[in-house]
Length: 192
Image 1 (cartoon, rainbow, N blue to C red):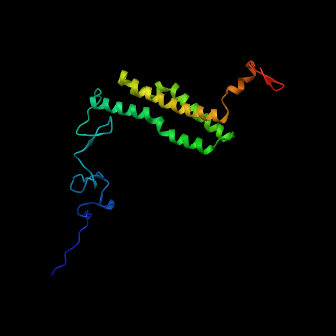
Image 2 (image 1 turned 90 degrees about the vertical axis):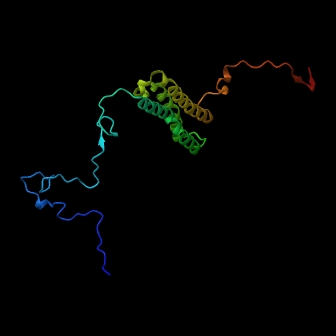
């Protein structure tokens, strides 16, 4: 019984590939001694990459107008941008819960962060969605969702500021109120 000879997954013997010493300076380093170009391991010649989008295609298409698939992709990306502020709501809630109800510098900083960042995002909503300008009127609903989520985050920050006593309450304006007129009074044990 003859023992089978084991073979490597890739045959790297000298008759198929050249070493650096075997390549002469007069020939190209990418050609073999027989003149054929040796493809590197794992190279697929049937797949071409277009230069515009970096996607694998059979042939490059150049600057083609937006296709329906491109428009759907833009819509999807616009909705992702609209929902992006919602991903940080639970982290913000957790940070506000961890800081507690005492008034200290960290609590005030986190509360101001929770109030200021949504306002900045609402002001810059047009620049946030400028890359999706091709969608036109279909962009209105994602923008409204973006503003609504940021208003929710702003409301959470305002609620935390109210609980900390950083927002004015009715008691702050009590000195400006006129005293209430009492309808009945008591004196000497009799009520009138």
